[in-house]
Every structure is written in structure tokens, then in C-alpha cells.
Image (tube, rainbow, N blue to C red):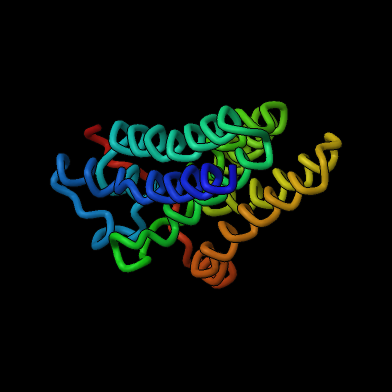
Amino acid sequence: MVGAWLAVILGSYVVGTFPTAILVGRRKGVDPTKEGSGNPGATNMYRTAGKAAGAIVLLGDALKGLIPAVVGWGVDNKVLACACWSAAVVGHIFPITRRFRGGKGMATAGGGVIPLFWPVAIIGITVFAAVVKLTKRGSLGSLAACVAVPALVAAFGYPGAQVGFAAGVFGLCALRHWSNIKRLVSGNEAAVVGRAAQ
């Protein structure tokens, strides 16, 4: 069983490295690692290539977190599911295929929350959307979700190990937003604005 756990966790990391934004950007004539914020994620694709591209990347990256969590749960239990979810997020943020330079992990993290903690997912998405709508800043929505999701997992009474996984995953995502935090403090954070033509 240990071998199966290791194989599924490693496979989840590999799934996390799938370069969704880069592949979508290539079809749109955009390199998300060199345009906009330089982050290969849904928000930057929305800004640089439009709503459709951003939505496709959001869905693809979310599936990178959702599918490993479901597979891990099917192979053994929810602890393995959380480990696979975490591995996928690490793969997205630190992909070995791109010299460990990946995205910020929010969509992949959010995708895993859906099967693992579905009531939390509903509230977390609502919190994210509300903050973005009010502030026009995707990074603020992400940071709000980074705080809300682990707190909600604990509030809903999930086991301590699962709270720990949620805190670790979203804590890592929050750290990846450090540059955004600095721009927010200085008042230089860009609003979420996509190409009007798309």
C-alpha cells in the first residue's frame, strides 16, 4: 500500500505540472510568463488574452487539483486524497519541467476543495467572487480565500489532519502572492481587466 500511495502522490505532482496557461496562451499568441504579471495562471491569461482564455485556464487548473483528490480518495482514503491534492498544488507552483517556476496555485487548490470539502468550496468561491467584485483585484480575492478556506475547514469540524492540509496548501498559495501583497500595500496592484475583444 505504501508503494501505491507514493505512486499516486507522485502522479498527482506530475498532473500539477501540466502547463495549462502556456498551452492556451500559445493558441492565443500570448506567452503568460512574459506578458502581464508574468504568472502562468487564469488571472493573467484573463488580462492578457481575454475572458475565454482565462476561463479555460481556470477550469484546466482547477481540474489539476480536483482529479488527483478524487483518484487519491478512490485508491485509499481521504488522507491520501489530501496528500494528492497537496502534491498537485506543489506541482503547479514548482514544476520540475519549468525549473520550478510555476503559477500561484489558487485554481488548483480550489479545485481540490470541491470534492474534499464541498460546503467550504461553496463559501470559499463566494468569498473570492465577492472580494474581487468589490475591489476589482484578483489577488485580494485570492488572499481572502487563503484565509477563509482553512478557517472554514476547521469551523465545519473536519479532522485536524485535513485542517492541516488545507492550511498548508493555502498558506503556500498565500506566500506565492507575496509580490501582490507588496503591490497592494504600495497601491500599485493592477485591476483585473481582460481584452475587450474577447
